[in-house]
Image 1 (spheres, rainbow, N blue to C red):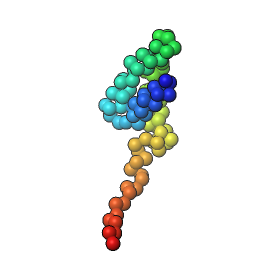
Image 2: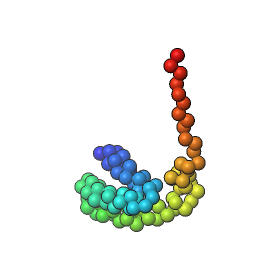
Image 3: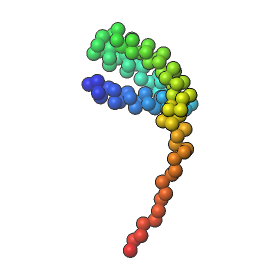
Image 4: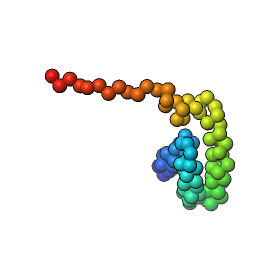
Length: 94
């Protein structure tokens, strides 16, 4: 169950960390109820609150670190402009 929760919510977490603009902040707030509900139901409400507070405080800090370090820039959107686009070639039909 934890693996399913982590994989589904993980998509939103990475989208929030590496997106730009208002969409990133939407993805920041979207998983908050899920961070409370699912771990809170399994481990107890105390752990749900702890996870929500850790997310609400830790996300902006982690986002700043990722966007202002070379490792974060290489992993994020900025590295995409350095890569070449794949060349589309026409196939021979002979």
